[in-house]
Length: 256
Image (cartoon, rainbow, N blue to C red; front, side, top):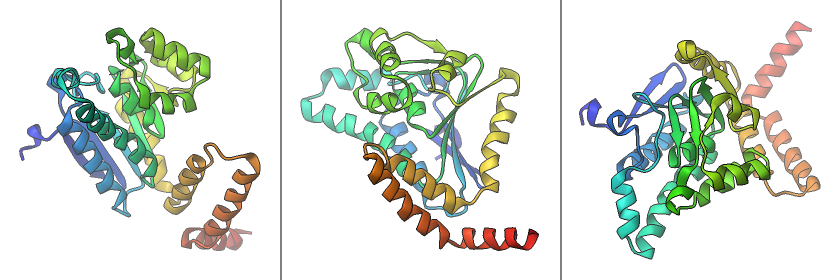
């Protein structure tokens, strides 16, 4: 398939897998082929031991504008079974992002709205250009971003999550960072360079340590304090036995 016809472009730069949503004429709106391609690309990156991080970007002027018109029409015309299957397909991306062993980073420019904002929110880290906009406007058409709510509630306070989901207002990148939805905001003019520099930092880190840390952080969701500590003990022991840790300790002891 010619590159221009691929819904997601996959490029490997060093040990960073770059996934570009490639429907710029549709503002990278989500449809069946794009959702399937994102899942395939995430699995490809996860199966490549040379990959230390995944960067998700959007071609053109926006990151992702949410569901496209054909997807909305399918919702309107579909049966309960059809809509359940469609919703579950999107849910699989959100779950998969947490299951991928390395950090998955969203680089948001332009707008990230509805399901597009959900995709960004689901990532482990969100980087934004200063002019980027975020929002969950689904309520305006009687829809509920129900799966995204599970992620948003873990990212921001209950009251801010309620406000974002029920008013459907767009917010700017600085405000999004202020409430914990975004990790870093970079100037528009240097966004590409700043994003690359940030993500390249993962190339210098232990892949196994990051993978164990990511799994541990998400595994702790819902655990009682004592159970979380016990889980930490298990991961601590595993980390000590990895090749990266053994080599790192050896290097440190040589310097002492």
